[in-house]
Length: 424
Image: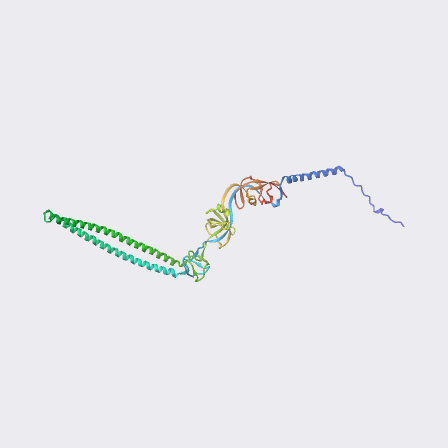
């Protein structure tokens, strides 16, 4: 028996060819050189920068020239342009003629104030007015009577003067013929002079008494006029006890309940005129100095832009804000509702052909004085000066040129570094 060996399974292998050693050395040198070419610029960048930031954490924008519209976007609340609040004109008991939400017309009675004190005061003053009218009429009669008496005195003095003058002429003729004595002649002269003085004094006294009577009548007339004004004012106050609607609209909130006792100037109710609406906007205090009445505004409603005008600015600052009113120009948009919120854009200034860049967080972190200009993968800190700002852009006054690319995201992460490496 023959035992088989493993010679049949053996296979002759060919001897691998040996490449020259210098070929391997050449390939390794080429790879090393290529690696150095890639690493050396990176090492130089790392050595020349203070900090490195991934590019995905940054936002970039390019400086360009264009028109800048300086504007401000604020939220506005639709309010009625006319919504008067009615107050109680006097103390009393209120009786309401309407309910909240009722439609009312101008002049319609809304409430009645029952004020017995005011009504009684009016009656007293009307009685005083009637009494003063009677006193004035009596004073006029007395004045006429006194003037008649004065005229009688003047007339009597004139008659006496005429008689004395006649006696004087008779005495002159008699004295010329020596029919009367010297004493009688002189007495006739004295009587004429006395009659003349009495007549003159009667005239003066009548004139003076006339002035006195006119003065007393004028005083009484002024007192009567004063009393008339007082009565008219009380009549006005009593008429105001009937509270009427000043406009067409609907009744808003009722501040009092039926038959409540109210004090003077206490709010009773409000009337809302729904035919005219305005926007009440809250504007940040920092923009208050840049606002002016008549400034153009744009209101967005249902994806449509409506032109409006800033009509009022509150002089008071509350919660770092000022309140303004925006009124629609032209026809009122349809579909407005009380307290509806709308976005309002205030156009404060228009600048043409200025250097500008997209607005970003770098303005706040750098106070608008620092920007990082990007050159390749290196960002260098530059001192800049900014001007007007809009919602989307900011004016560059100095420090940058058109075509420069800057970082517009927040730069506080750079920690004030002069150069920053932007990594991929």
